[in-house]
Length: 273
Image 1 (cartoon, rainbow, N blue to C red):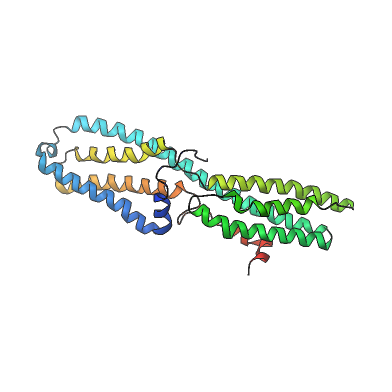
Image 2 (tube, rainbow, N blue to C red):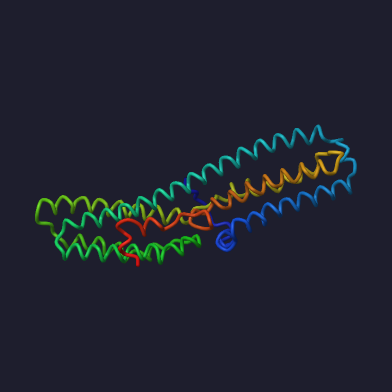
């Protein structure tokens, strides 16, 4: 699933993903949530001692349970959708690389001059994708103009060639159809590189966490250790959920991202030293 939405806070999320390890992000988000939970819990117990006696537990328990159920459904929907989006992006990249390799194999049916022209054009396209576009996609940007000359050269290599034998005509038709598939996969890849949660879902996910965490402070438990265990457990769960949403939100950024490896494997390995 590809999310469509306006840019929220350009560069911040992607900078975090590209410059911090998964462990560092875990400590930042989950550790931050736990610190807030512990601090808030201690402040509430100190400023409002009646809360620790469980005076409002009946009301807070109902509200907390309902809110947790709704928030859990929203998180589950977002995580599943983003995981599917990451899988679709990986599948699309693999398909584009496979189609590129297929064009190279089909070019073996052409005369040496035409085969060389197709190979050179494909070499330029593969390098443009990996060396030029991928760094931009990692930053959450996608400039189709970086590969327009290469894709145009590929089409020109076939437009300027007229097959003569039946074998050449068959492979020519297949190659032209495959070129169209490559162009389609390329457009999808560029779109996936700008994938992110819409603003409304962002507010629900992150704003919901900001509302749910303080609710745990109001659920009174007489034992300090027991209450701290309760609020820190909820905070850690919320932190891990937010980390998962952040990690999956940008399929070409961070440690968990789509790799350009398919463009370096198989037949395409000949283009790399």
